[in-house]
Image (tube, rainbow, N blue to C red; front, side, top):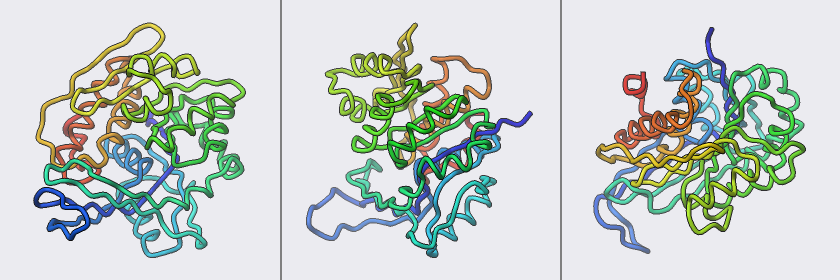
Length: 298
């Protein structure tokens, strides 16, 4: 039987600028600019679709040209968007990042106001189909109230991506205010984990997250790999070797790899190794989603 996964959150047009040489502030820097499709939730959905899951994306598409392009591209990638909505009152999400000549991000700006329309009421209308999924994934581009609604109303295993230090606080606040605070898996990078817990180390941050109700914690450490922990065990897996072409989307691919591993019956903590393989695939691609990811993980 085909695995069904609902992914809730942002879908953006990505503008990615990569410099030819060292960055010079307050000046025009030579480089090249790529236009692609992104958004944390959309990237995760795209990866999972490439890996063979029936993936339905729940997002808000703007009424502009970019909105139409995002819808068309999603359908081309076999991402089910029938639970999404196109709202003429919003412009589509845009993510702009600047990478150094080594492909590592220097700065980024995300314009994702359209996602504010994903409210608990919006989700309630789709409750049946969300709950019928085998797994549910959300990013913290959606509001704290929407995240808390998912925790309170969806019994399907719920995975959340922290997105950024600013937005990751939403999942922490949702856990503190949920009726039954429980989350199957939370993926944060090191900066996000320390920011939301005020911990001094990733191990201390993970313990605080477990105490809040997270069952499985994944903290990505960049070049150092990933630290993962649940109530019974903790592991530190090193990063996998490979040439870095572009870091955009690597964290999204990591969570997609983790979810994919669970769909195949892989147990924690080996799920993190699938996440690392997916992240490496993306790091070695100029795109936010490596179109060949299935050849690497399957």
